[in-house]
Image 1: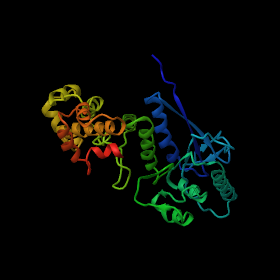
Image 2: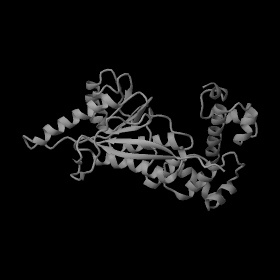
Image 3: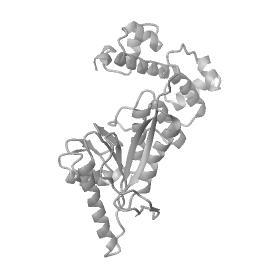
Image 4: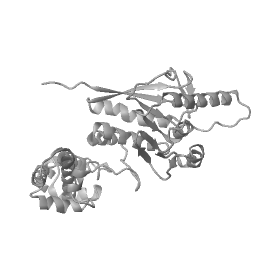
Length: 330
């Protein structure tokens, strides 16, 4: 049996002066947990800044930072964190140095970020990226207090407000502070799979949030914004084998609950019935089979757990505007 080699993903975290510590710690904790939850990918995180030492938003010093590299790997992820406004106590020699450091970051971005690099900005980290022209022609967002400034420095970008995060090609951006965690969970779901992102969210005790205009939440993650262990055990069992001929008694046994109690808990915490949840995952599985195989509709229905293609189409219409065949043509 051949064991696939781990794919290493370089991640450069660029820290500005007065870096907002939560912008660093939240997203990177997600990546650290991703390295624990799976072995296919390993995120190799390095921290860089114009100076070897910065003072963070809470006064804690961050030291031993690498210099901004002359070149970075073609497949690197570059993450720009936000900062906080300096406290104005009058003339401050540090403010002049901070301005030089911020300009150095913008110059570095112009020089080093290429079309193959994934750029991820957290909070006001979008501003230096915008000044470097990296959002020109792209949708982007930032902290609500910075949206007007972002639009001013990037007139060729499409600045969107009231968004947790925006994904536009290889230019990703998030709103304020904790939205960086949401964006990084989305990144992990894209690279490592929804199940890994879900496990991390549960470990960090955070919800997988989205607003109405954000990228659509994966069906594999729907109904998971709760903390009830019995319901999560039921969902884990179904997600592992969605095509199985599940009965309420089967799921209750897997969850360690009585059928009646599980049914009540499921409706209360997942905000849908157990049958609806099973069908949503089966439709998601059918969507993947249609997109990535040439199986006919009856075989897709069978492998997804439906009794017939007619039953698949009926379930499909509850969550999709078009017909199942459109997934094959997408």
